[in-house]
Length: 349
Image (cartoon, rainbow, N blue to C red; front, side):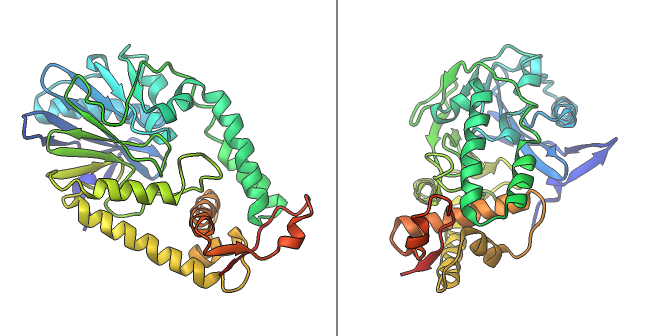
């Protein structure tokens, strides 16, 4: 059951959850700030403090309400726990991965502090060359949608939805990199876990592990095919799950959304089992030739709005995984010889 502390409390049109404090075995405080990053979608921002150095881990989305939520949540730290911390007190900013609900608030945060920003090298250009990233990503997405089986009308509508929030962020300089195996000066170790995002990292803070969106307490983190972005894909993600599954000495894992995870290995095992079930379902669906769209409908039924894209990406990630391993093949080879026919029909071997 979800911890009720993590529910969003609506106040004046903003969404700010109840801030919680976790004390590490070395006496450091980790404050969890649940804020509404997009309407009805909550993200967790973290502040790590040893009383002298303050680190901000992620910063929410670029939406104005989210920026206000961040300020209100930070005010709770002083009000509830007697350690007043403002954005001006932040010494470093650590971005766990290049998804806009985690880095999009950087433009706002940097108005209040000149603290350097760190991110993994595989997500660096998303922050520092954002306009280029949007153009390239949109081009790849258009090719993906054309090959998925979506109608041209649905392709256009999906592209429009994808681009809605893309103009709210402006490029930001990256001051340092979060590299695999590196121990930061603040004695925080970086663990690179690609899959959900190319540069996704977890952060070891004494006996607490910040797992960002790599592992979540209730849902299975969203997957996209590697054909859209290198170093993503289900294969990378499952390998990264195995890597983090061995981390058994942490008292609790704290995610980028949802609740604390008291038993990380058990939760990892549950997520692996969920993907196994989904892979088996894809094989079952592909007893007859199926496009990625048909697989998406078979897995998730009828969906609307932005969920069309999310469901399609998730389905395609599983199809791609099975195709890479030779468990699915293209059944319409002859029609694919025609450049005007981009849709692959997959069938189980």
